[in-house]
Image (cartoon, rainbow, N blue to C red; front, side, top):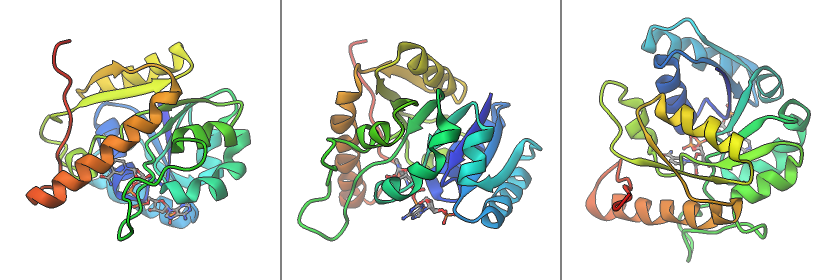
Length: 214
Ligand SMILES: NC(=O)c1ccc[n+]([C@@H]2O[C@H](COP(=O)([O-])OP(=O)(O)OC[C@H]3O[C@@H](n4cnc5c(N)ncnc54)[C@H](OP(=O)(O)O)[C@@H]3O)[C@@H](O)[C@H]2O)c1
């Protein structure tokens, strides 16, 4: 599958790119600066020994991808998404964004829409937004030689879009778990605040979550 990763120059997007490239997908890294995207693509291609990673501006990357992944800071969605709206029309858009504010009174600071994924859906009304990958730490993704010890919790309004994202998760060895409508994105994003707190308290980089009883 052709996957565009907006903000793929960052830790989370680059980790997803490395895992998916290793699984045989074609990747376009997106950035506010096309040159920076191309440089990150070349670095990842060399590291993963795959020739299927390119780089482009966020808007061009969105046009090229069959699936578009938002690996941007939550605070950057309002500015970035209007310029990629055309390229995302009708497509599966995966929101990994988590609205965290470090150093303030509250770590989890969701937007008025309730979650970053719902904010993304409002800004991209013709896209099929699925919230996923919030609990898969960048550190865990980047170590491509070992299996990821975490379930892939995902939610969204469109069943076919969720199955596409579930399949992308399976392709990197994850067990996908459908947690229902996009209105559950807030609780999913909030779990990342808990994981970030666990990481800090126990000096970890990669705490994760697994569902029992399934
Ligand atoms: N890191 C993790 O372990 C982790 C785990 C789960 C979920 N997430 C979520 O995944 C998303 C990306 O995380 P990250 O750690 O990779 O973030 P990051 O490194 O801070 O940012 C990713 C990329 O977004 C672009 N960017 C930065 N500020 C921006 C702005 N104001 N507007 C538009 N683009 C901007 C930058 O790319 P250019 O400068 O090249 O445009 C940057 O390389 C976040 O929403 C985070 O909550 C992260």
